[in-house]
Image (cartoon, rainbow, N blue to C red):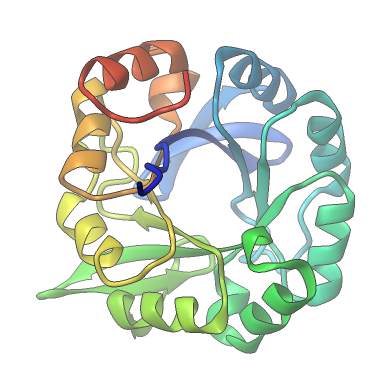
Length: 254
C-alpha cells in the first residue's frame, strides 16, 4: 500500500525592516504585523510549517537578520524555513544554527547553481529549498531574482528540472503575476512544474479564499500551499482552511 503524503498549509512572513509586510506583485508593500507575534500565533493555530523571507536582503546585498531568526526559532515548534540574502555555505550554516530547519535560496542559486549541490551534500537535501519567482512571458514563464526585480532569461520549467538534478529537496514556486492579487494561484504554472519534477512543490502567490487553496491541491497538484494576506488580515484562520480541506477529501494534518 502506497502511503499518501499529507498536504501542508504554510503561512509566510515577508520581512522588511523587522516587520511583516505584504504587497501586490512584489510591490506596494504595507505593514502586516509583528513577526514574532504572528509566528507564535500560526504555530498555535496548527500551521504545518512557517516560511520567513527577508525580502530585500539580496537586493540590498546584505545578510538575513539572524537575531530575529533566533528569536522566532526559540518560540515555535514547527519546521521553519528562512530565506533572503543567502550567498554562501557559511550563510546557510549560520541560519540553520540560529534555529531554522530549512533555508530558501533564489538569487544565489541562479547565480551559482553549484551552491544547491554543495548545500544538499553538506546539510541534506531536506534542508534545501530553492525558490523560483516566476513571471509569465509570452507562452512560457521566466525566473526572476533580487526580490522579483531582475529577469534572468531562464525558463522556469527548465530551471525547476535543473534544481531537482542538483539535489534540492523542495521548490517554493511563486507567481509574481498573482502575488497579492487575491485572484487565486496560477494553477497552470503550478501543475506544469509539479508534473515535471519529483520533489515537492510549495505553491505561492494569489491565495484568496478556501476554494483557491483546494484548487491548488486538486488542479495545481501542489504539495503545499503558502499564503500570507488571508492569514495576516484574519480573513481565514489556519483551522478554517484545514477543516474545509478535510471536508473536501484532502489529506491534511488536523
